[in-house]
Length: 424
Image (cartoon, rainbow, N blue to C red; front, side, top):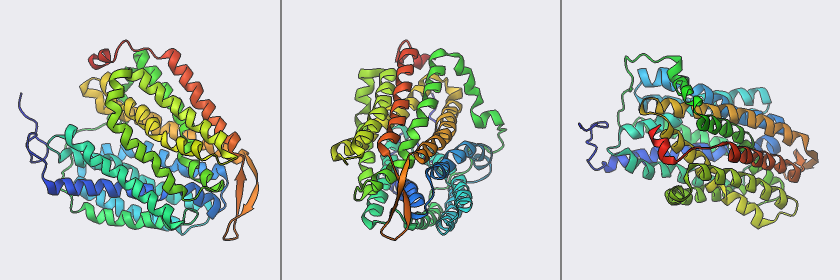
């Protein structure tokens, strides 16, 4: 069978160190930009600008809205007309300007509109950064994990820096991310030249949305997987939007820095995940992931009032299992169930359903529930008032939601064997 080349390298050739360093730096900055401000956005909007929970939820929902639109851009424009490194440069530079402008606004309509515009620039870069990496690696299966892990490290470094600066309720994290975004955009011009992959190829709406993957919904196990994944992504958004405001409100020092414990555990569980996969299989990996989401919310709930440190920290450390056992296992399951010609469409479809549609509904639900449980107001060190919440009650909602999906999934998901999925 003839070898398929990637870029100008042979698949058996060692990866050029200069290419590795450039791709690794790109990944570090890609996720440094996101981690520098997204974690603390809820605290800034709530304590810094005085926005209520529902508006904070809507603001976080801009990422999901953009996530649903991004495939159009990547599939129909970026991958057909522009060299990847150049479109990455343009998107990051424009995005940096939009994010900085957003950091200077104090009214919700302007903040919301600018965040949406920013994420319309940023979300396509997630797929494009992976694409440019795969194109320039001689052996992506072996080499990509070592490059992608720099993204997680970038997120960790950003959280540690922002936490140490004690600016979580200010616009400084957004401005740090804006500067890093412009820097990343300029750096992207130094990435290996990567021409568009589908020049001259006719790409339709069905290709972009992954509609070819809809035929997999005729398989009962896959349909249950998609519905369960969509439902569990609704309570999941409580963590991403409101964990940092929660920790800051109850007085946990350096909350952003402590939240990086979750990414540290993510790296560990990613490394040991193959061992669990062999022993547990897809169904029980997904169930463990769902169970840990429910458990972490229960820990937050019962640890909230008295600031029980071990409960809060354990809840953060569970992030590795929550993310890897659910999202990564789900991606592997989709890859096994889909035939080679529709694997890309299937991954796009599940991302649209979960991170897009499920994420948007989840941020809206989370914002409404957090807004419902306002118990009063307090005054911050800067003299600005902010809402105080009944976090014990709030965290019970996503705990119950994740547990309910867990039960439904456990009794309705049946896949004969993981080996059978490979043959599907």
